Figure (cartoon, rainbow, N blue to C red):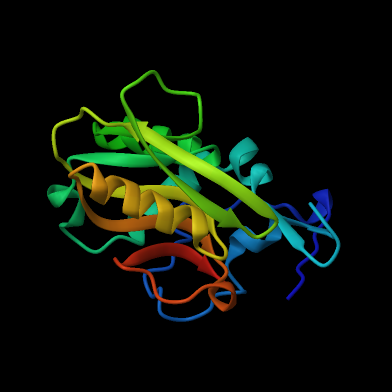
Amino acid sequence: MSVTTTDKQAKTIPESSTNRNTDNLNTDHPFWQVIRTVPNFPKAGIDFYDITPLLRNHVDAVIDAMLASLPAGLMEEVDCLGAVEARGFVFASLLAGRLGKGIILLRKAGKLPPPVANKAYALEYGKDTLEMQNNLPPERVLLVDDILATGGTLTTAYELCKSAGHTVVGALVLLDLVALHGEFPVPVYTVLKI
């Protein structure tokens, strides 16, 4: 599905615009007025959903919506947020600041000092490796990323946290492209599904 917008269509999003029912597709959510679709990027046949306009003018509304998508009481079970490189860093940082939680970074290879745990994985259009510090005490982690597409990165983040002794209680993403992935090993909480 392709959604296109122009800058003239980007309207102020009321802070109450959240979607608590994450079981249904929600292509009519007000955030779609702001998200830009870039066809054939990064390669032919892929529609890239550009969420950066939301971060320019609607940060509070986005963070409110992400928090509203979580079940009541879940954040009391979470010790820290697992921030998945790179846009997951943005959302996890904003959430951590709001919640007073810490962050574990899940980074591309060679970005963290040793000791690290790592895991290679396939992307929609290539291969990559995630790493995280390997000497952290076990914690209950909520993974945070921007978009769940094929699930390779988020699944790798889950497996990496688990292998390092952490308990992953779920994953929080802004946008879930449900047709592109299968079941995830823990609950996925999302604001937008398409």
